[in-house]
Structures are given as structure tokens and as C-alpha cells.
Image (cartoon, rainbow, N blue to C red; front, side, top):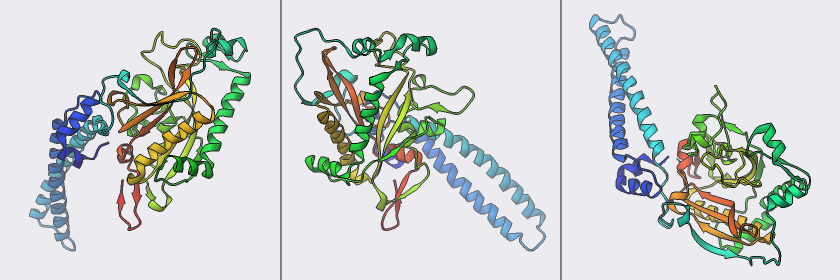
Length: 387
């Protein structure tokens, strides 16, 4: 969530930036509920003080009829105002959740992913003197993919992965883990990219695959419920990324500044409905309902957060270069970065069979948007607590 103080002081800018992301938000309505909330809070506090004063005046003696009557009136007023406050606060929070994070001024303004900007292209595209097979054709001919049997068992967009393709997947996870856990390699990446961040290695983590709706909403990623699987009759939602259950790990906690940054690399099986993609990428292993991901998450101080984001992009580029895969780097436009993002970068690898680049990595810069909703804070060296 955004800071309500910031919204009060920058209402027009907040509405403008939201519109750049494709969100039409009623900031004035939010501020109306904010004003009503503050007024009710003041009235409730005044009545509570009056109630306490009446209670203090009756200590050690039999209360008079007038005191009893005053106490009764105050209690009834307080119950009514507290009920009003609860209702207004719910409306206020619900509206506040609809306000997306502010995109940085450097983010390209656009209305669709077609307006993402290529900022770097690395590697030579390979040339072949024969018709290139795609990954599905190769894997199916080797017996590494079996979609037909998976469809009988689970339906469309599921697959059995077998043999050397499984070994390759595990090898890639291990390769990523080995880089993220190697402080010397991380130091070199930091130096090569002139970044001012710590070389703390990433801690491997296996997170839960489900989260409560309240927690999921705090990530800012449940705005598209039609894409997310839910347990019937239970307040549990399947994660579509390790982010959804790693980012809330410090829910309602205060982290010592001396321990930052805390970095995790999480492996998880993710689940997505892929609603609205009928007929797209039906061949191979694109757009599956179930897939595996390796995710980097970092909890850091605000003053190092942008460099931390660039560090993650640099790590992803390092992995691509080590694998000798041609790629380009995209600066995502405002319409494509998502509700909680202030900035987003994608890396896309060259696929010879499709003669195009396809997304393999993404790096999201969230600022304090999720931390505020999750009440994850930092205790500074001087003892002060902030987001």
C-alpha cells in the first residue's frame, strides 16, 4: 500500500500515475473516507477519555444516579461510534488497496507490453543451415515430455517431464543456487556493475505453496483472482510464484538494520489458471498450469533498494552469460509492471525455432509498497522504527 500521508499531499499525482498503469482510481473518495476516519478516531478517543474519567470518579464510593446515567450515555455513544469507525476503516483500507504503487519517473509510459523498451541486447543469434526444431519437438522425440498422458490425468496445460529433461531442470536449479550462495561471485557481480550493495549471499528456502487471502492480498498480487487457484471452502490460495509466500515471511515483524539485507532464493512449484490464454502457446511447456520457479527475494533498507534491484538484474544477466545464451533486457512500461511494482525489468532469451525472444527472467522493484501492507519494518541503529 501507499503511504496515506503521501496520497494526501500528492492526490493528483497519485491518480495520474495510477492511470499510467491502467488503473482508474477515485483518490477523492479515498481521502473522504480518510477524513471521516480521522474525525471518528478523534471522537472515539474523546469518549474513551470521558468514560475513563467517569470510572475514576466512581472509584472507592457508591456512584450517584447522575454518574451512572452519564456513564450509560457515554458507553452507548462509544459503542455506536466504534461501530461507525470500524465500518469506515474497512472502506478506507479497501480503497487504499486499490491504489497501485507509483511507477518511477524513469519507467516508460505505455498502454501494453508492446511498448516495453529494449535497453540492451547481448550475444549473437545462432544461424543454422537446417530447419530448427522447437523444444517440444526435440523433447517429445526423446521421450522427455508427455502431454497426452498428463492431459488424461489432469487436463490441458499439464505435462509429465521425464529423463534427461528432469536432470537438466535440477542442474539449472543447482547452478542458480550455487551462484546465489557464492559470496565471491556476488562481490564480482557487484564490482562489475558498480553497485553499492552488500555481498550477503542468498539463503535457500522452500516456502509454503499456499497463503491465506489476507496475506496474499498484502503482496498486491491477488488483484487477478481469475488467474489464481483457490482451495474450495478454505481461506487458502495457491501461489503463482515463490514471491507470494516469501515476501510475507516477516509479516508484522521488525528487522534489525544490522541484519539487512536479508536475501532468499526460493524454489517452488507454482500454479496459474492462465485464464484468457486459450489457443496461445499450446505446444511444449509454455503457459502451463503447473511449473517450477527459482525466485530471489530481498529485504533491504530503502536507501539501497534501487541498487538491490539492479543487483538482481545483474545476477540474471550473469546467469545468461554463463550459459552463453543470447538475450535482451527490457524496461517494462507502466501498463506492464503490475500493481505493486515501481519498476520492472525482463530478460528474454532468443528462441531460434520461433525467431523471437521469450521471457526467462523478471526483476520487480516494489519499494515499500508490500512492506507497508505487511507491516514489515526496520529498527535503525538509533532505535527508530520505519518501513
